[in-house]
Image 1 (cartoon, one colour):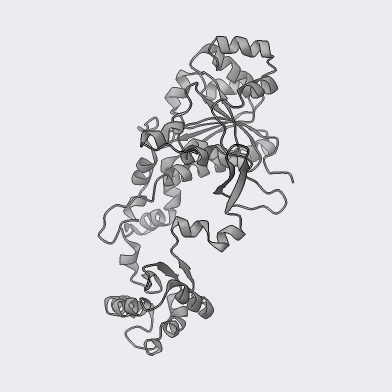
Image 2 (cartoon, rainbow, N blue to C red):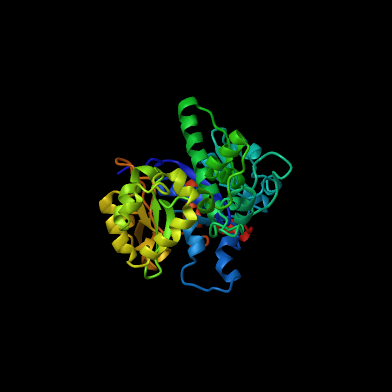
Length: 399
């Protein structure tokens, strides 16, 4: 089957996570992505060693570099840049998350590269956006999460700012960058316009918190730090079972499901109790109701409660950890986790593709490349170099 981005060539000069994720998403959908690394490799290759871990597969690097071909190119020397410019002439997209000052210094910025290919789409995935006093400031995932407001609404009930795991802002920034590239490709196809695409950690976090941002902008009220503490809704709340496992009720239309909720938990008399009959009064009497509910819920297992709630039509879900998630039948049925058959490592499970197309589906084709694995084949194929040319380039320190 064809893929949506078949025939699109992407040059990927990125590092760490945010930029590489964008290019990996494009590779999943059929783009030919060529990862360009310095002779020592991009720093993401050493991420695990930095923290004292030595593993057969660097899951950090693999996560955001799958499906790519990899080359080494020394952009610090003029000969290396000359090779890059030849590649730019025959490519559609250039993606980077290096700071713009670094790109200008190495002469791989937008204004330079578009001279070699006026149809080039140039995507820069920055920390805090292309304008303003911090446009060229270095940051990382936690900086994006913190500055983007997310930590203010993910606080625990004691109101301590709580990160959303590691890599959340980076991943979202990568998704936003890929989204921008796709829009630019469509615009080029429709209007013949090539352009620069800008995305950022900060912009991505604002998008993720858009509802809360809109609440403040329209109402002038900062969102609560803890949603659970603010909502006081027993039908939109996590519960712990007799085995210590968690599940969540997810019924925003609380009054619609209240009577069925009461039947499931053996408290039908509360369905029309004046203190609990609607969400307004339940919120006022929340502290009285919850100890009783929690005591009831601890008498059975999560699976029993979820089965009963499903049968009653009350929205609910398990609170999965990543062990649960990797074996969740719904995850597996939708190929949200898939296997890649690698010639070196054998069958390796990886996250699948979250957006599925019926006629032109994407696919995770391969794991991340070894450092410089495809240098010779790419330079011969794309730039027309001979083996003699490559030998000379190697002598000159180009790769």
